[in-house]
Each structure stands twice: as C-alpha cells, then as structure tokens.
Image 1 (cartoon, rainbow, N blue to C red):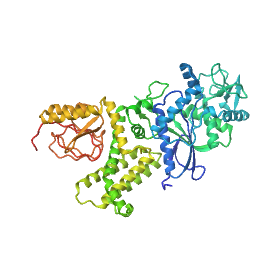
Image 2 (cartoon, rainbow, N blue to C red):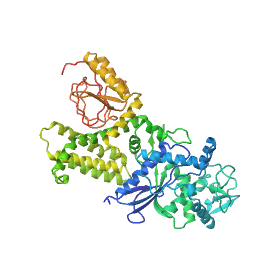
Image 3 (tube, helix red, strand yellow):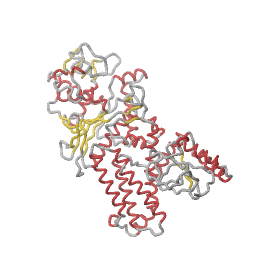
Image 4 (tube, rainbow, N blue to C red):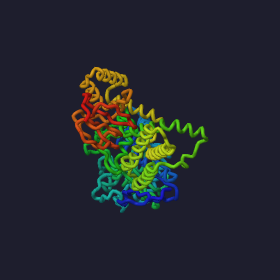
Length: 570
C-alpha cells in the first residue's frame, strides 16, 4: 500500500475525502453500465476509461477489488430500436453488449469482476420491490409500481435538489396516477409486443433505476464502497437508486459516490439523445484506441472534455512519441542485455545509476503518488513527470550514440528509466500487449488513412523529393514536404535516407513560427531567418521552417519543414 492517503471526491458530501474501505484490503465498486441498443459513443468511453483507471489504481495500491459493471438489456429505448429494426429486443441488446465489450477491449479497459444483465436478475429485482412495498415506500397502480418520494425524507440528498423542484425522475412523461409527480417507476405493466416477466403486480418489466439497486446488492451487498457513473446520472438515476436502496434495506450504505465529467462538442454535452455524438468505433477506425484513451485521460476525470480533432491528433502524436522512445530504448539495450545474460546476469539494481536518472525516477515516483492519490490527476502525470522521463530516455539514447566509451551506468540508467515508464503506463492502461513496433505501425497505418495516402504513395513522394533535390528544384522539394506535413506526415532526413512518421497536421500558413503546443520532438535546427542561437526545445512544439540539414532523430520528432534554397552560412 502507498503511504500517501488516497483522496476521492464524494458527490454525496460535496468534498474530497480520504478513501477508507469498509473491509480492510477489499473494495466493492459498482459502475452503471450502458443501455445496449446501439454502438457506444465517446461519452461512454470517458466514463469507463475513468473508472478503469480507478480500478487499476486500487489494484496497484494492493486492494482486492470486486468491480461490478452492469448491462441494461431491458429498456424503453431498446424496445423502440428493436421495433424499428424488426428484431427481438433481447437479441438486439445482446448484440450491442458484445460490441461494447469489443470497444472496451480496444480501449484496454480491464474486464470487471462481474457484468450482470438485467434480464438475468428478475428475481432480485422483484424481491427488492416487494421489500420497498412492505416498508410502505411504494404503491401499486393498475400493474405499475411507483416509489413514493414523500415517504423518504432524505430524497434529494445526493443531487442537492429539493423535492418540489423535481419532476418525474423518469424517462417518460408524468403519469397522472402518481401521488407525487416526482414518484418514479419500480415496475411497469406490460404492453402488447413488449417483453415481460411475471410478478405479484402482474406481468411487466422493471423500471430503469431499480435494476442497479438490485444488482449491486446481489454482488456487493447493500453496503459497499464506491458507486460511480457519469454526472448525468446524479439525477434522476443515482438519486433514485439511493432512495430505493435505503428504503429496501435500512442498513444500505454506499460510502463514496463518484462521477465523471461530460464529453462536449462546442460546449454542449455529447449524447445519443442529442444526436451530436461520435461512436467509439468511428473514432478508433481513424485514431489508435490508445490515442483515444490518452486524449480522455489528458483532462481530469471530473472536468468536461471538449472533443476536437486537433486534441486527438496531439494525443496520437504523444502515444507515438512514447512508443518510439520505448522502441529505441529496447533496441539500444538489446546487445547490452545479451552481454549481461552471457555473464550470468548482473543485478541491474546493484549498479550505480547516473544522478540525473536517479533524480528523474525519484521525481516520477513522487509526482505519481501525489497526483494519483489526489483524486486521480492523470492529466498531470501525462503532461509532467512521465513526459520528463521520456525526454531523459531520449537524451540518454543520444548520449549512448555519441560516446565511444559507454559506461555500464548509462545502460543501467536507461533500463531503470524504461522500467519506470512501463510501470506507470501499465497502471494508466496505456501499455499495449502488442510489441512497440506493432503499435508504431498501427499508428502509422491510421495516419495514412487520415491523410488519404498509402505507404507506397509516401515512398513515391520521398523519391520524387530526393530527385528534385538532386536537380536543385528546391521549391518543388519544399512543397512536397509542406504538403505532407499538412496531411500529418513528417519527413525526416537522416545521414543516408529520408524516413517518415505521423505528426499533427499543420496548416501551411502557420508553419513559420514555433508554437509551444502540439507535436513532440527532441531536436530542431534553428530557422534561417533567426541569426541568434535558440534554445533547443525538449517538449511539445510545432514544426519550424528550417534549413535543409540532416538531423539525427532521438526518438520521435516533428516534421522539419525547411526551405531547400542554399543559404550562405551566418
């Protein structure tokens, strides 16, 4: 367990609190799942990536986590969609449950301990409704059963709403048969053509809210540690869950209610009902799933994330930078590791690391504990200590290339840095089971797709540019590079060849001056127009217009968009 107290924001108390599970060493966590009637969108990805990070971090802290995430496979929306398609509602929802699982696998969300479906838990749902009726907190009207909010004085405690401010708390219009407009359905009488189950109140199906209360109690008991979901679920869904669970069982007690922020587009919430959403599948066809995960984690989980192509491009470039650094490190260390193995495998920890590596690793450890224990600030990790560690890895690689006499401490430092990066990435869910080279190729393939090019197209343009340079057609050579960089393809001239890598597309009119955001790179040649010596950036920058000079890349770099015209040295 970490020494730092783990603080989480509790929606119920409206403040950060020290996380203390009910049972030492064990955590019960219930996250509301999808209503399975269509492909899941990026808003769903936001929620389940956020709580996957929580799940992973709790495991890292040493807890045994019972993580439950449900499927709503019985619902009005499912029935409507099934009627539109002429499909059985349960078959439709079953199909989209599997599509959701495929999306979660792509996003590297770990499978929960349990993934219950409403249709498999009718007994638990009926039993809980009966308990609520016996407590005189619900009433039956013509086969429907409603929860009586007036019988639960604490109604509104979670959301902060007053009872008189509430309406139905339902997904349907207010029913005049209700005693109070805020009363909500626990059981709905069957209608022709809809799936139904027998009950003491007649055939029907459960209301939306009772499902989660019954399933969470089934797998976690009525008292557990964490209940989570999107902020849109605070009211009515979680408010109603809170009320009916407490009414059914006086011992019901959920310690922490946690909620993630929305994904917005133009400052408007993104959702299926508003019709302004992008499916996870749509996005991952064009951007690597790791890039989408990185994008979502680049903002604190409780803050809104504004969806934009430019931010996805930056996230994709950051993932490429990370995996290129790991790939280069693995390649540089392969011979050294073989030599160590032949010598009987010296203990790397016994070797003295460079002071720079020691300080960097210490800072990564410290920052990781501080930021993650403070309500999961993944954004600060990605943009802070992790990025600094990657920069030092690239600096170490460059140093190894230049020095004729290579010290064991340099190799052991690089090994230690790589191990630290891998550990942090694993906890954050960014470490793929694929090889580094496979991930890099997957990122390149998607960059080509976004650019509307093939690998052969890029190779052909590189050859055309080489020939143009031989013919001293510098304007043509420049234009090829500019055109490719505008499409997200960066050309890099090495001592004996030109290679390419994905980059953030750059509009040509913005190429002249540096911008301190966007593409990650390690080494730049100063622009021709600047006679003063410039400090070489080690972090995110945009491409510069530069002299055509061969540059040895140290890890991934941004496009060096440069004029081909020969310039007198200054």
